[in-house]
Length: 472
Ligand code: GLU
Ligand code: ZN
Image (cartoon, rainbow, N blue to C red; front, side, top):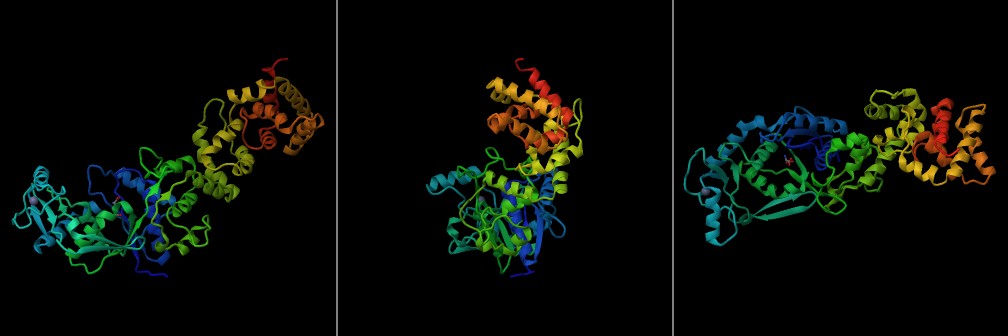
């Protein structure tokens, strides 16, 4: 049911490109906000000044925009909210919910060793009445008893025993807030109702709820911790091992609509099981309650299949327009290189049927725009394997095609295939040497259409060139 009071936010830390997990988080926030007719906000968590770079923030904006994930209102930069964070820490201190601590890591570890108990902070400074100092951190006073409950739409209520949580740091000795502090304060001030993010942040959530309560907030937002995204080995996607940057998928020629549609299925599925569908339908059907707890497999083959479907559904003009940047990149002007748009338009319907990503296109149509260099493997598999047949087919094709009244794919097909059929040569074997002569490869768009587009003169020239390299 629509609920315009819903306020979601995507809160990336700009420490790298936008990865698949981040994009999925952004999308699920966006779907929730749009489903309810609420607000989708964007907050850049850039307090980690050394690692946050303005170019990376820009890249996040561009990638979200590319995916068609828009946001409402001004972007909040966490780094500009230092005063609000310090004031909130001040309030916790005033109310005795937090205290100054002078302990060094070594001191903490040494005491833990002495205790023989769990490593971690022991509350040493709780009642020492320390004040501010450039070496002091501020710690939250976690209640010794009871529990903190995180209400999660996906996981149900998750209980954390307070005695398991140490008195955690909320402000570093340099005066900067810790992640949990800034995050809690910003969500309060932005009146966020739904916190949707990766499950790796679940352990931070009880701390955030304690901070909220400590600041006198009567409510907590609804949480939804999204399942991990894993590779085919069921390992968490990793920057080092897997292709995780959304911009790389953009560069390979995935369509943003296909990418967005596929990302929506990572942990969620519509009740009727129809996964490929217009975004408006996904917005209407999406419910956080239907997100699974179990990890989501990022299946690049399935993404490619989605993309192929989206490509085939494009109008021809749209397909050409989206393909051209890939062609102009691959076929930079230079000697022997003519990228002629009309030629591409002529072959485009056949290409559109066959590609899964736009990045495959240049290789497929290269023979139209450049003098071919025959792939060694392709030559060996066709011309060298059966030179007699290759010679026979090339000679026949040259004679028949030179004499064709009309240069059309159908006429070319009828001539060459008619010749092969009459001599009981398999059509596949008959075509192979012609294809290699024309395109330099064994696979590509349909051959007769390719030859029609290439034109009679250039086709005959290539057939003769190939023939000249074979025994007389
Ligand atoms: N900035 C945090 C991160 O990128 C996410 C914070 C949140 O969504 O609450 O991991
Ligand atoms: Zn201490």
